Length: 260
Image (cartoon, rainbow, N blue to C red; front, top):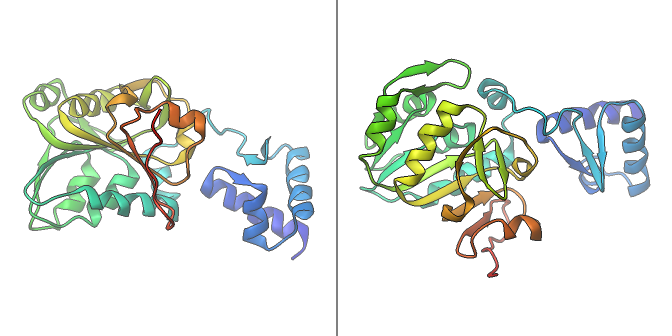
């Protein structure tokens, strides 16, 4: 394959994954390390990517979070693996909260058992409406058209009177201080649900440790299980409680967080 064609394919793959390592390029295009590095140098010199230690990122990576419809159009196999792994944490006859995200929508599309789901997500509600065994309770309020969730002060108060067996939450950003979402209303709803849950399951790709968002849902020490697509670094692991179970949904072996 000529370099120019490969460069275009690398750009497409980067748009989908939001991060590529030198090894990713070697594996995807069956090229040597030197060839992959030359491609990275060319893309960097053209000003089309941000070079990192060992790979590349999009120019705007970490500066913004795409809206819901954009994320849905960029759904990846990594997100699918996370969504399907989350299904293992549902039990019949339990009461759950499920947040608004493309990963959790995929989970809802594959969830069909006798249980109760509270959600503020329009798309989760539509997906679960096809499942006769599942009781669905949708939050009241005004629809946020961009990110497709309902919000109202009444919905927040209603959630404060419910105890969930598990709250499933997603993130647009993660740092040592907690889990974040881009919209204040979304974060407020999800934050209350997390406070009201016996267990909290966080689903997020590894890129969320870089993305910057504004509104905190909850601190990391209340996360019971973190399902992601890549083994966290030692620094990222230290952000979580030693009791947090970390699951890498990559089709290979699953690991727990090491004890501090």
